Length: 182
Ligand SMILES: CC(C)(COP(=O)(O)OP(=O)(O)OC[C@H]1O[C@@H](n2cnc3c(N)ncnc32)[C@H](O)[C@@H]1OP(=O)(O)O)[C@@H](O)C(=O)NCCC(=O)NCCS
Image 1 (cartoon, protein in one colour):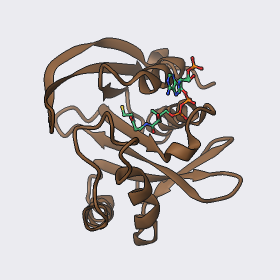
Image 2: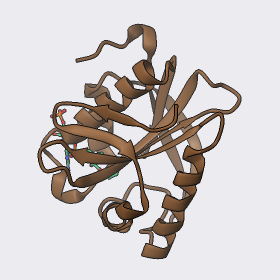
Image 3: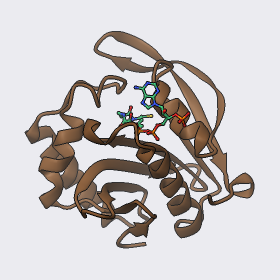
Image 4: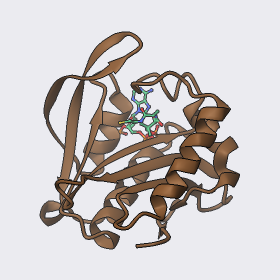
């Protein structure tokens, strides 16, 4: 698949471009939005490099990495970023990550975003398994993934190293044959 375009009721997903750097920095550079991520807030230079890597990855064959701008369907602005990475050794399976600008939180958009990522992965990419790992303390991510139908699988101990030390992750997953679009 070359270019991504995936539409939901309130959101859309499309490939990131250089024009999205500022909007992505508003998420990746925000202390609240990166509170539960393994990395500290990114600066503009780092986000520019991430976008360039994402655009390069979009041209790879086979394509394994999708870094997608989350678009508000009504106002057409970029309100977040989503990531889907197909595992090289297990190409039926992909890991997702997602983040919204804090100004968007608490209105069900995160849950819609997880639903849209599942729809994209299962229907457009033909994946069988989609999983995401979150910090044990990340309640909004837990609830968004559970409500979107991603069951909790278990805990990976010391999965990531953060500026505060080792951190466990809780893994959620959805399988194509148990997933229903809602
Ligand atoms: C995770 C994230 C996308 C959720 O976005 P959101 O738009 O606020 O999510 P929703 O509004 O769909 O809320 C999901 C659930 O969390 C609950 N919730 C939201 N914010 C909350 C908070 N601060 N405290 C407790 N619960 C909260 C909602 O009530 C909802 O629960 P419900 O389904 O029982 O009603 C958003 O918090 C975010 O971008 N966080 C930073 C990046 C991140 O942590 N990404 C996840 C990596 S795994």
